[in-house]
Length: 325
Image 1 (cartoon, rainbow, N blue to C red):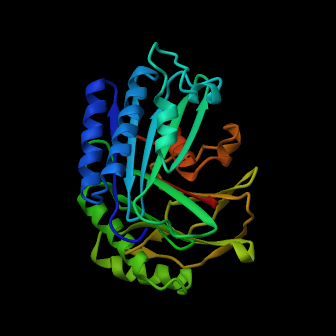
Image 2: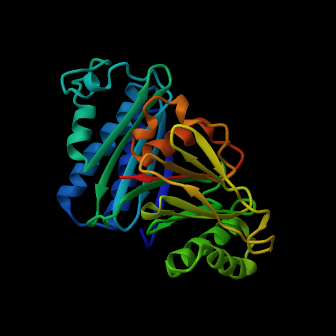
């Protein structure tokens, strides 16, 4: 995942929005791939996902993420949901008088597909495409980052480097916050993976003194040692879920300005553990146990549910999820 990232969110409440999203995605895709077959598949999937938001949910949000390896598309809504997801995936089934080929087509055309739906609470559909061969590993991850309402640039940033995760919330919002968090992300991806988290945070602190600074958290999952290490400053919330939720401890301070003693803490990790890191644009009141089956879904779907239901609309909002493949 090292390199440039493109991500955006687009409200979809009308078929004109569906067409706009399709054009926007195709434009971005044209900058990273010339594979006409891939472009054709993604065009159909985007159109179906966006139209489903209009026809079945009466509106929702389309989330786009693309890095060096993958393009990830999410359709998120608070519509009626599905009582029988398997039946809705059948090509002949429709609830709106259409041909009923939408979800089945999305599933077949995607390199990776996932769906989570609860009656009366809404649906999330994930379609993922590989732009380059995936980097093998025991862990999979995904994140969602959206800007303060009205801003084009997010003041938060996140990144994955090996089994390590960074989330940075630049102080305030807008361009200055974006500059601080982007610099943290860039340096995080450059530093040696053998550098202890405490030393890494110290280096980031020194490097961000020329910026506005911000809250920052680092986490590293060590499956062979059955543990995760966490090192943070400020109000980035780290939570481990394995049937129950446990919060991880951050220190007080603003990275790049003034920080207290840098410490890392170790916590148990197992193949059933899900790690969630979130900026304070996400309420900490979520509990995966209240969403039947959600912990078993793809990290992108877990992140999208939390973002949909617990985003505060007065700040940048970021949530990152890592778990075993």
